[in-house]
Structure formats: C-alpha cells, structure tokens
Image (cartoon, rainbow, N blue to C red):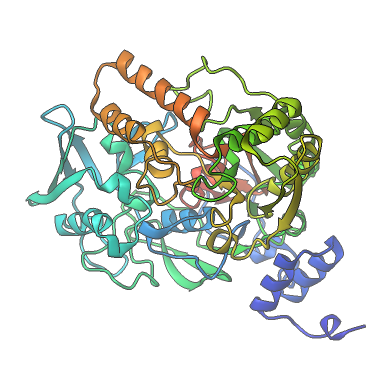
Amino acid sequence: MNDDDQNPVSEQQLYDRLTRGTSRREALKTLAAAGFFAAGGASLVLGPKARAASNQPKYGGHIRVALSSSSTKDTLDPAKGATAIDYCRDFMFYSGLTEYDSHLQPQPALAESFQTPDRGKTWVFKLQRGVTFHNGKALAPDDVVFSIMRHKDPATGSKIKPLADQIDKVTASGDHEVTVTLTTPNVDFPAITAISHMLIVPHGTTDFSQGIGTGPFTCAEFKPGVRSVAHRYAGYWKPGKPYLDTIETVGIGDKSSRINALMSNGVQMINDVDPHAAERIKNASNTRLSAVNSGNYSDLIMRLDMEPGKRPAFVEGMKYLLDRDRMKQIIYSGYADIANDQPLPPTNPYYFDGLPQRTYDPDRARSLFKKAGVTGAKLQVVASQAANGSVEMATFLQQAADRAGLKMQIKRAPAEGYWSNYWAKQPITFGNINPRPTANILFSQFFTSSAPWNESHWHDPKFDQLVTAARQETDKTKRQQMYADMQRMIHQSSGIGIPLFITDLTGYSSQLGGMDHKIPLGAMLGHRFAEYVWWKG
C-alpha cells in the first residue's frame, strides 16, 4: 500500500493522474480519493432527492465535464480561444449578436434583428433591451463596438483577425443600435458574429480572468489547465434558461481515463470519445453516445517554408501515402467519411464533388519522392493524442513511407502543450480542426495568406482574392464556382493532407437531458451544451 491509498488527493493531483494515462483501476481509485463518489455516486453529487426521469427539462444539479485538450494556455478571452475547452467555456460565459440554428443559419441573439440596406456592405444590428452583464452593467452599443473592433488590433492577438480585417468601422448608430460597415460586401456577415471569438464583452475589458459576459453561467473559478466552475446566472436574458446550477469543467488528455471517468459516473460528459469504445458506451446502462459528422478533421501538415516541404513533389507524394480506407476502419471503427485533401465536407452546400479522389499509392509516391530528390531521406513526423487519431495515422504513414523509400521517425509529443509547442512549428506535424459554420470562415481562418492558423504557410494571392470575392458575390452559381476553384487549389498545392472527416463522438450520462438539441458544429452540441442540458436524476 502506498501513500495514495491512504491520503486524499488534491485537484492538481487528480488532474495530473488523469492526464498522464492511467488504468481503469487507477482512475477509479483517483476519482474516489478525490471525493467523486464520496456521497454515494453521481446521483448524490447532484442532490439527495431521487427524481423520476422525464423528457421535461428540470432545474438544478451539478455536472462534471471532461474535455480532451487543456493546458496553462486556456483562456477566457473569446478572441484568443483555440481549443474545444475554450469554446465550451466561452459559450457558458458570453453571448453573441447572433447564434446558429440547427441548419447553421444565423439567428438573432443579443441583436433582436439585423439587416443590410445595401446588399452586404453595411449591417445594422438592433440590440435587445434589458440585457445585463454578470457584473450588473447593462448591455449597450459601446460594448458591441469595443468587442468587434478589438479583433482588428494586432495587439489583441485575435484568432479571427483575417475575418475582422473586412470590417471598416463599427459605430453606435442609436440608443440600442450598432452599424457595421465592411470594406467590401459580405452577404454572410451575420454568420461571423455567431462564432465564439465574436462573443460580446463589456467595453474596455482587459482582464478576462473573471469571464464577465451576458452568458448563461457566471465564472466562479478558473484555473487554466486544471479546472473551471460555472454557476447559473439568474439574470440570463433567455427566459427559463439555463437548467443546471453548476458545471465543473476539467481537462483529461488521456482517452482511456476520460472514458473511465464517464463510465464510473465521475464525470457526466466527455468529448473526443475513442471510436473503439463507442459500442461500450452505447451499450452501458448509465451512458449514451452522440455521433455527429460535421467536418472535423485531423490533417498531415507539411510546412512549405521548410525542407522538405519546399519541394512540391515531396508534398504531393506524402498525400499518396494516406491509406484513407484503412484509417477509417482501423483507427475510427468506421466513424469517419473519406476526405480528399480539401477541408469542406460533403454536407457543406459548397462542397465540390468534381475533384478526382486521391488514393493510397506508395508506388506513385516513390516516383514523386525521386523527382523531389528525397529518396532515402530520414524524416521526423510529430504526432500527439491532442490531435485526434494522429498517432495512429503517423504509424500508418511510417509503414507506407518505408514502402515508398523514406525513413520516417515518429515523435510522440505530449498532449499537454502540443498546440503551443509543436503544432505547425516543426516541418511535419499533425493538426485537428474543429468544424466551421461556413466555407468562407474556414478558408479565411486556415488558408488565406494572413491567417494566423495557416498551418502549412501556404500563400496564393489568387486564393486570397477568391475568398474576398466570394463574400460579396450574390449570384449563387458564381459563388459555387468560386468555392469549387478554391477547393481545387487547396487540393493541388497546399501543404496539408486531409484523409478523413471524423465523426465527433460525445459520451454522456444517461441521466442528462437536452442532448437531442442539434447544432451540427461538432461535439458537445457545437460547444454550447451548457445552455441546453439538464439533470434527470
């Protein structure tokens, strides 16, 4: 018996143990030592009264949620959010001018209405009255002006600066009205104001550690890389919502530990479920599985400004080493769709099905490597559990590379800090990209020359021009052709290989209601679960 068997563990110890990779027995012991079962299981964590299960939402209760990515870089500044755990917290604490419906169409939110008098160049947002921030301040036009304009300031470090660059100015045009003037028309602009980065904060905010917004929950505690605690906001502007009293959010990087925590009732929701455990979660009496394919992908990234990515034939050859069918069946147990090295899934209205499907062909890759002058070269590819399935993809790639005449070494980077220290910083790495609501947002954030998340450092002025031109094109046929051209350009010359679109798997307790709400933007109800879920117990 060691010390762990006798002494209670701290929150930090709990986090460390669950993120380092543990057996099921160790995870259970750790959760028990932390008091997860001290009151007799999850039902007592949520309150002593037994409640009959029903489809009618109920109020009250506390849940714990575990997400796969967490680090000391976690932030409550919506402009800087970069991971699923950031996005989920953002939608707990903040609200946007608009929000998506089940068809990803932007609907009024803090703005009770929006309209454009000039086909997309100018947008007028009428604000709701009576909305208050968590600190009691009433929502005013100045808050919206500040929240939007800060994205244009390079000092902010906003992840959507390329999107914000299309904004010329934002003005308070009335008592409860804001007018946004764009540099060029964008008929999809209200879709941009619904993304997490565009959520509204009080005017002049510089300290985001308190998460002051107009969202459904207030921030009671926030320890980056450890946990956060959210309390129901009684003054939330949506009548009757939210339902839960409190939500505790933690990061558990290890997949097995995350599943163990769910199946042991230690947590009530997890994201990034290992597909190999999907059937176990579906068949267990206390858990359920939500499966959504909305365009999530893990991609092979080859930096085009570094060797050997500077050589186009090498980049093309690597894409022929992606054994997509085998990856789908073995890595994801069928929970994926075949992709073709461009980021729009077949469910996107601008998906172009005319691209020839790139297939697994090590002989063709060998020929391309010879042309690139890299035959026999020794390469390193960096993968991590932080990027969904990338370690397994790297293993397949290594086997294929050997057949094609390359010697490939796999560096397995820790999940902790992967996005800050490894992703797209080495010559060959893997990424994982959450779905985006529109083609233009996705292209603007990841493929334009100035995009902060331009993973392969691909630069094409013609592509940049097409992204801007498509925003203002009102003829649907012409827009369709523009997006087809952009997909072809990415497929042919960018430095990323996208083998699959991964089905987002969310595991949750059978005692959670509200999980049938559909927002097809990835796991955790498009990161907005906090507003919709309720406790049946």
